[in-house]
Structure formats: C-alpha cells, structure tokens
Length: 205
Image (cartoon, rainbow, N blue to C red):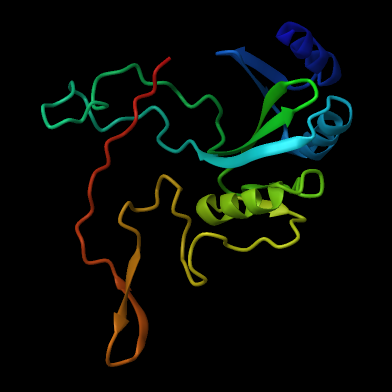
C-alpha cells in the first residue's frame, strides 16, 4: 500500500526528493513549488487536512557540548553519540504534516529556507488550519509567510524582541518583567539571572 503511494508521488512530483524511513514518508519541496504542490496533494491525492505545521532551526545541528558519558546527577542524554551533519545547507525549514482521512495516509512536507530571507508562501488559503500554525512559526522562529491574512505574534507579548525557538536565542531570554508599585505598571528590565547551559539532545542515526 505505502509502496503504491510513494510510486504515485514519484510519478507526479518528479523534481522532489521523497524519503521513506521509519514507516513515514517525507517529501522535500522547493519553496517556489510549495503552493502548487499543496493544491495537488489536496485535490488529487486527498490530503484534506493539515494537522500540524512547525518551524525548524538547523543551527549547530549535530554539535554537542558534552563529550563524556552520562553522569550520576541524572543527565541521561549526556552521552557520546555519532554526530550528524546538517542534511541541508539552509538553516531553517518548515514542516507540514498532512492527513488523508479517506485513504488513511499521512505525508510530511519539508521546505528549506535560507537564513537571510526565511520566507515562504502561506498555505492558509489551502488549509485554513495553517493560519495559526504559521503565526506560531513566525512568532517563535521568525519565518515569514507571504500572503498570510494576519501575520502577527501569537504566543509572545506585543513588544517582544527576537524569536525564542531560534538556536541562538539565549535560554534565559533578553528581558524580564515585573510590576512596579511606584509606577503602577509592568516594566521590562534586563534579565538578572546567570545563563545556564542546556543539556543537548543526542542525534542518533
């Protein structure tokens, strides 16, 4: 069944890379072809639902600050592993998870974006569920979605600076807020806590 599905994708989308591993199918799409590809997938392949959309940041992909084995303090992920190179030279990517209820099939789309101009066409006119997902990716990763009807931050504050899920965003943030009794309002100040090194995930082949 899945082999027939992959063959159909390869016949229709000859210029795209299709990856089949762990019983999951991923298709890498050039951003210039995203909109037309999504329309075909919805209208001819029956993917009537976009169930998720998320941003990815490949900065420092495969690198680790840990060299030794796990310690007795409980850092179970801090062990040696084979590092993997970035599978694509671009820093950012957007991943779309599609579902066909009638055919009981799932498909993952991936579009890579460069660091200088991380922008891609919105698919909110194809799947309405993309509206808030794209706003979330914009808010947390700084990825822009062209022709989005209302591209505003959705999780952070109105005056928030930066994009918190980018790998180069500090773990402690840039500012902290508190209520000032004298001024009678909330004020923002530089963070007063020391930065902490986060335990990186292990990338396993």
